[in-house]
Image 1 (cartoon, rainbow, N blue to C red):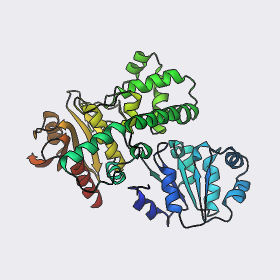
Image 2: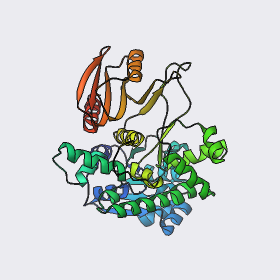
Image 3: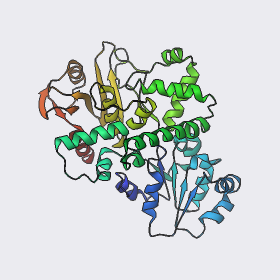
Image 4: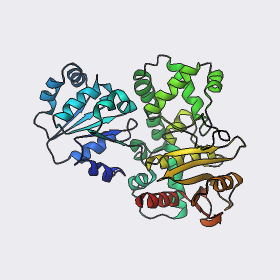
Length: 396
């Protein structure tokens, strides 16, 4: 069963402008399936640098690689391109020869200056994440929603995440097994091997620490002290995990450096199901799971291709997420249950930055609207949040 992905329209719009289009994202998020589906009906070839023969020819002689694998095809998929030697220079050669390539990578290595410096103006890059809520509902063939159906589907999406294979599997225990196997593959192949990390034990311990610390400000020295790791090791692990699409780091929003915390990021997971697997905790309900719901809302914002930050002052005023749309700031507060009241921290942000719109998104709570100092504050659910932000994006 193929699920049409949210990025389809954007992807199709790029094909006439670029010979090289790249899809990056976590392993098993559906990159290869998406590319193959869009290649149907044309003279195509599929290659992966996981194949030693393909990789060896790519590494040793790009012209022989071109003759062997690209000649005679209109379009070629080149999967897991991050494993190729001098990938940037060789992809530039193929682009200059007007070869039409769709490439994929489960690592942000392709976004590094060592690769992108060769491809400026020649390539467009799209990120593909595990299923969004919209895609999840398509996979469930759910067309109509009551409040109870909606909450049940959101719960499942939060608990088991959006990886296509997990979503399309019915049995709960099998979902857990798939997530466990995926995590082990990501740790060993995408993180440890790709970024030359030898101490797998400390890497896994560090990952479990993060799974129990979602939504917290990460102070490198504090984490290092707790796990007996150096500052450099903590930074290396975080960089490797982020570039392998296991975690998301969001930076603080600030204008006044004297009042606001400006250095430490917050860390979340790209997929809440994977996070729950790492923490070995699959809650039966969302009671007391405020941070997990917060992580889930962030993943939905990221899947909408939004730039997200958080706001926190030294006086302890805090707003979960700040979205910047065309220089218009939108503060977003996340609550498991909403009482329809605007809290002190959100009021403080509104008074300081005077946004036109603020959103309080909750799992339970009535939809409502109020005004604070000329700012419209909307209380809504995840569907209302998506609708509001999509409408604003479409007007840009």
